[in-house]
Image (cartoon, rainbow, N blue to C red; front, side, top):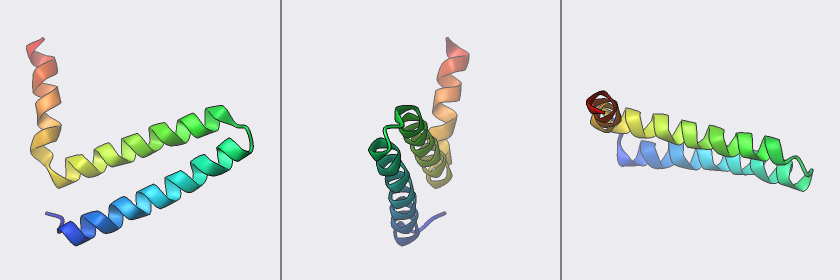
Length: 67
């Protein structure tokens, strides 16, 4: 399990890298690249959340099976 310090470091790393890429794309007028970077950041944060709390990753799958 990740410590809160390791989680904070990983969040900062993801945010710094992705926001930098998003900012660059926006400044260059590349909206589709900026949107892709936002999606990538969301995916990375979701994976990190799942790694931090694996139980939360199982809940959406259980909800989908029930539907």
